[in-house]
Structure formats: C-alpha cells, structure tokens
Image 1 (cartoon, rainbow, N blue to C red):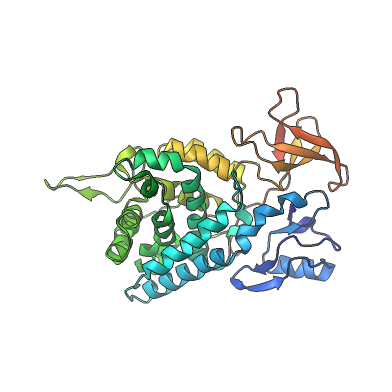
Image 2: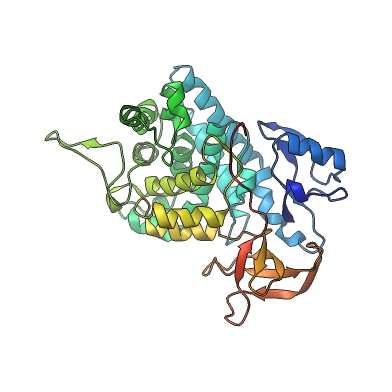
Length: 387
C-alpha cells in the first residue's frame, strides 16, 4: 500500500482500496484491485478525489491499516449518524435508538482491535459524504481508538467504577457519534462554523456556542449518563476557557477545567479538534497530520488534556504508514511503520529516483546516526470550496 496524491496516479497502478463517491459513500466508483486507466484518473480528479491507495509489491504488509475502513461497522456508524442528523434538522425529536448505537459501537470496537497493538488512523479514508456526517463518523472512529489506547488512564480517571466498567468505551463511541447533533438545530448559516472558525459577530458566536446544550437536551434521557455528559462538555477546555458556561446554585456562571471535565468529553474534544483542523468547513483538501499536530501544539495547547494529546500522536502520527517523505540526506523514502514512543521518527524504506522502487533495508530513524525527515512529499493543499 502506498498513499498517492491523485495527480501522481498513473495508468497501470492497482487500487489497494476501493474508491467511493466523495458525496455518496454507499456508491463505489472503483473496486479494490481495479487497474487504473488514464481516462478514469481524469474522472476521479473531476470528482474532487484527492488521494488513492495503490498496491505496492513490497508494502503489502501495510494493507491491514485499511481493513477497518472497509468494515460494515464503520459504514453503519456513518448511516446511524446520518439518520440522527436528518431527523434533528427536520426539528423532529431524534428518538435515539441507544441499544442499536451501542451494538454498532461494540462491532466497531471489535474491528478496531483486529488492527493489533498499535492501530493507525488513516485520515484520507475518514472523509465520506456530507461534511456534518463525515465529521461525526471520523470523530467517533478516532475517539474509540484513543479510548482503547488510554485504557489505564480511563481506569484511573473513573476510579469510582470497577475497572471493567471504567475501561468500557461504548458510551464514548455513542457520545462521539452524537457530539454535534445540536448544530443541526442552529440557523442555517451558523451550521457552517466550527470551533476553529467562530462566527465574526459576537451575538452569532454566542448562539453557536449553545449547540452542546442543545445536543444534550435532545439526547440526555435516551443515552447513558457518561455519553450525555460528553456531549454536553465536549467544548469545555482543559484550561477552563471553554463553553457553554454552566450555572451554579448561586446563579454564577463558570466553565469546567482539568479533571472536572468528564474524561470522555476530553477525548471527544481532542478528536474533534484534530478533525476540524484537518478539514475545516468550507475548504477542499486536507492538512497533513504533521500540520494538524503542530497547530494543536502551537495554538490550542490549553484546550486539551495533555495525556490524551500524547495518545493522539501515536494513533494519528505525524508521518503515517504509506506516506512519502524527504530525508535530510536528500533521498526520498516511504514510511513503513511507526515507533509508538517516538512518533516523529518512524521506520522508513528509501525510494529510488523513480519514486516507486524500494532500495536498501528498513531504516529506523530513532538511530541518531540516521538522516531525519526534512519534509513530506506532496501534501494536499487547502482551497476554499468553489475555487
């Protein structure tokens, strides 16, 4: 498996994963194993498809990272979110089928566990269909990966529960699926905004910031308490700067901070922020993991739990498997594996001048004597929609 920008795809390459319609995720345009042709590549470009996953004879072992995105559970998450948002937008009480959501989440957890000890989130395959639905599905997927990675942390943060219940992440998945349901009740123009793009008008900004409360009011009596709490608190920042403000008995308003925020909400916030920075509403294209993680550290460090962020860098590493990079000695290489304890220094294989043929043995960049990554090759640019 090699991740290629569509502009570098060539006739004769074989797809390692199917290509779905960017706005209709249930419509497969090209099946896995299809051999690309020039006219088909041009059609994919016209549809706005940015990346393809292609077979590479020496990188078959990395295909396991793709399997989760093709699982029925991942697709069912998408359709359940789409149905809930559709009902909410029609001002209908969503009628959350909580048990069905829990069952789908359990199935997705089982699928995630098949990825092994160090699963990787491949963000290119997380964006399917409408922006609101694809965002919620991506956040649910990433939140569950984080929850599974943070099992010991969940047990310590939920010490009032037995260790079996404390590590259970089913309600985390349900909360992540529904975290932005309240946005669907906002006025049309306000739905286009997100936490990295607040409305310019102070009054509109205040209206937008009510959406966690709206979502909570729609689902709190239908889902588990921890799921409801995470929906309500998913914009409460670790440094206390979040929203919406909460009322105390004396009438004063405040926000939560630190460990007072439910750990599920802290996880959803981190996954939500990652996806919003990667794919801001109103833009075509995607920032790379490296760009997103750098922005999170530099501009949003006070928002998230640092323990959750450390786990995020292992789940969505700066240089995921299949990415091509330029090393400090001038050679090109492809990332073949991630070092969990040192995500900025993965294992790579060098590429010949044709940017396709692998040469030499695997190189572990944790070795201080090896060259280091200088830049990514061909990151996808962000463009305003309509350009």
